[in-house]
Amino acid sequence: MNRTIVWFRRDLRIADHAPLYRAALRGEVIPVFVFDRALLHHPETGSARVAFMLECLRSLDQDLRDRGGRLILRSGDPVNVLPQLIRETQADGIYAHIDFERIYGRVRDARLNHALAQENLKIRWFEPLATTPDLIPYPDYRDLWFDDMNADMVPIPAHVHVPTDVTSEPLPTLADVGHLPDSKPLPPAGTQAARTLLQNFLDEKTDRYYWQLSYPSAEATTGLSPHIKFGAISIRECYKAAQQIKSSPDARVQRSRKQLIARLRWGSGFAQRFRYLPQLELRSLYSIFDDDSWSFDEDLYQAWQQGETGFPIVDAAARCLQATGGWKELNFRVRALYSSFLSNLLGMDWRYGALHFMRHLIDGDCPIDHYQWAMQSGVTHCVDKTWTRIYNPEQVAVDRCDPDGIFIKRWLPELKHLPPAALGAPLPMKGYPARILDYKQARKQRVKQLEQQRQRFLGLENVVPHLSRLPESFLPFGAERFDTEVSWATDARDLFPPPLDLNAIDAEQAKALRTWFVAHVDIKPRKARRKPEPEPDTIQLSLL
Ligand SMILES: Cc1cc2nc3c(=O)[nH]c(=O)nc-3n(C[C@H](O)[C@H](O)[C@H](O)COP(=O)(O)OP(=O)(O)OC[C@H]3O[C@@H](n4cnc5c(N)ncnc54)[C@H](O)[C@@H]3O)c2cc1C
Image 1 (cartoon, protein in one colour):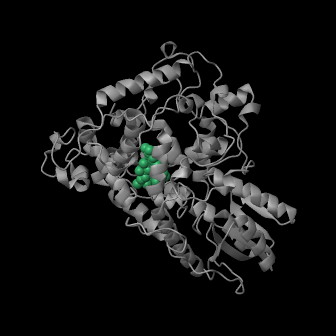
Image 2: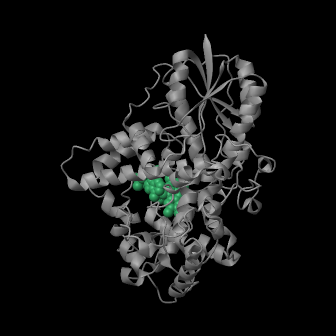
Image 3: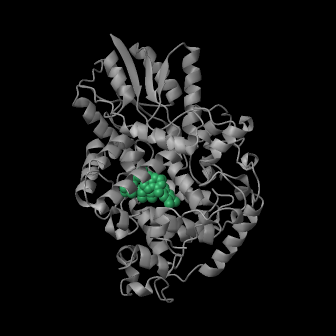
C-alpha cells in the first residue's frame, strides 16, 4: 500500500488541509510533527506561544484519532529526522505545505530539499492558501485571494490510516522542550475551539465589531489570532463563516463582515510580502531607515516593557501584554499605540519592539508583527506622509480607545481613583511613575527626522536600489540578549522558497513590486498628486 508522510508545521488542522487529504487518498498516512530546537530556541519564540502550540498538537492528535489515526511526534533537526523517518517506515515521500513565516524555516527547508535529493527521496510541496510564487501586482493578488477564499474547502479525510508499527514520542510538557512555564492564561486551543470563537463572533459581535474593534474593554474582535497563527483553522474557513451573514439586511453587520474579511486579507498579504522579501524579518523595507540614527537606551526600553512610562494607556498595554500575551484585549489600535511610543516617541529601533512582542504574544506571527511594527514606525513608506502614524498617547488616546478607563484601571489599579478625563495625563503621584518624555517635543523630532530621510526619495522613479537586501548574516535581531540556538544562521545561504532577487528584476517587475508597498505606484512628489483617500479605519479613529 502507498505510504505518505504528512509533515505538519503551522497548519495544525485536518480540515481544509490539502497535503493530508491527498495523502489519505493515496493510502496510509504518517502525520508527523517535529520538535525542532532551532525554532523552540529562536530569540523570537515565546514560552506562552509554545504552550499554546502544544495544546493545538494535543487537539490535532485527537482529531486524527477520531478518524482512526494519530499524530506521530519526533524531535531533532527535521533535516535528519525526516529522511530517517522515510527510511524507517518505507514511506514513498513527504507531503507538506510551503512555509515562509521566517528565514530560519526557509533555510531549514532548503537544507531538507538538498538532503532528500542526495538520497533520491521525495518531497511534494503544496502551495498554501492565498499565496503565489509569482511576482504579481497587489490588485491581482487581491483577486487571487478572493478566488482562493471562494473555492471549495478541501474535504476532511473520512479515515486516516496510520501504520501501527510507527512509534511516537509522548507529547512533551513545556519544561521538556526547555521552556519555563509562563503564567499567561491560554485560550482554548485547536480547531473546535476556533470554530466556537467564530460562531460566538457571528452570534454576538457582528453588530458592533466595526465600531468597537479599537476598544480593548469591548472585546469585540474574534480572538482567532492564535488559532490562525498555528493554522488550527484555515483563513478560508473564517472567510466562509463571515460570508454566512452576507444576506443580513443589517448595515452594521455588513460593515463588520467586510472589515473582518479585509483584515483576514491583510494578514495573508503580509505573509506574501515576506515571501518576496524575507529580509523584512531583519530589516526595514528601505535601508535608509535602519542606517540612519535609531537611538537605544536600556533603561527606557525597560520602562516601556514594564509599563512604567507614566502614560497610562501605554503602561496598561505593556502590562496586559506581559500578563496575558495580548490575544484577547490587545487589539490592533492598542498595539499600534504601544509600538508607536517606542519607535516614534522614544526613537528606538522598531526591531527591539517587534522582538519583545514576539516573545510575549500568543498570536505572535513574524510577518504580521514585523511588518506592522515597521508600518507603525513610519519606515515602510518613503514618500507618503499619511503613513506617519505617531499616535498621541495622552487624553486623545484614552477618549478614543478606553473612554471609561476600564482597560487602564484593570491593568493599573493604582489609578483606580482617577476619573477617565484624568487618565490621559495624570499629575505626578506616589505609586505611579512620572512621564519619561514630552509628547509634543518627541513627536516634532520624529516628524523632522522622517521628513529628512524621505527627502532623498522625492522625484525618484525607481526605488529598487534603496530597498534593503538580504543581509550577509541571517543572525536574528537581538539574538545576543537571550539564551538561543542560532548556529544555523552563520553559514546559511539558500532559502526555500527562494526570495525575489532584487538585483535581477526589470522595470515592469519593479513596478509590480512597488504596488505592494504604496497606495499609488505614481511616486512623484506629493504636491503633484491628488490627496489620497485615508483608509477607512483611519477615518474611524485617527489618533494623530
Ligand atoms: C505592532 C503590531 C503588531 C502586531 N502583531 C501581530 C501578530 O504578531 N500576530 C497577529 O495575528 N496580529 C498582529 N497584529 C495585528 C492585530 O493587532 C491582531 O491581528 C489582532 O489584534 C488579533 O485579534 P483578533 O484575531 O481578535 O482580530 P480580528 O479583528 O478578529 O481579526 C481576525 C484576523 O485578521 C487578521 N488581522 C486583524 N487585524 C490585522 C492587522 N491589522 N494586520 C494584519 N492582520 C490582521 C489576524 O489574522 C486576525 O486574527 C499586530 C498589530 C500591530 C499594530
